[in-house]
Image (cartoon, rainbow, N blue to C red):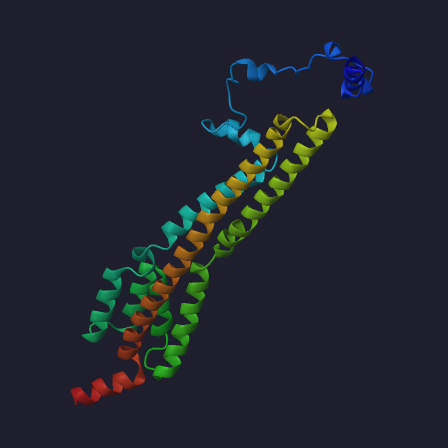
Amino acid sequence: MVPLLMSMAAAQTPRAWTGGTEDGREPVRVAAVPAAAEGAPPPAEPLIPTHNLLATARSGGILMIPLFGCSFALAVFGIERAVSLRTSRVVPAPFTKRFVERLQSRDLARGEALEACDANGSPVARVFAAAVRRWGKPAVEIEQAAIDACERELNHLRRYRQVFNGVATVGPLLGLLGTVFGLIRSFNDVAGAGAMGRPDLLARGFGEALVTTAMGLLVAIPAMVLHWCFTGRVDRLAMRLDEGCQQVIDEISLEALGESKRRAG
């Protein structure tokens, strides 16, 4: 009886139900280890070069060309504006101080004042000349002429401001477009190779996306900073022009000349 029960228990084991035996167990198969994980050396160069500017630009794709064009325009117009908006060029202190002092001392006639303004040729001299041409007129008329001349000079000083604003706007958009192109390339590489489990195929497209995004920001941030700096400098120069014009108007207006005649009498 006991041998019969033991034989029945052995027949009811999982291996018995499936028709197999404990000794017929198949060996477990282990997936092959990739060559990179078996101690293979890493690649000699990174996928995104960072020590060579030319190699980095190449990895950014075709959109690096307009981004470099924006950076070149930013450098050229930035240098031009930095030179043109110098205080010594727009409102030279020696000329302004000497001109006002001679007007206050009544040592400067109308013709001589116009010659001095034409000889100097600075923006403040052109504004002074517009006021001197109304010599002896009421202060309101002289002030209006000076305001018109000052507005013309300020418009000339504000030129190229849209270049900085445009670069600051277009730069990030070009970087974003490069990001989209890089992602499209990454997915195309993976889909074309038919290997969804290989993330290394995404590296080239991701590198292009990151490089163009970084270049767009590197162009846009200085452009915005220069736009703010030059706008503030023009505003300060406008205040100095207004102060100098007011001093000239106070000396050559009809009211000022009449008061000086009464004092002399």
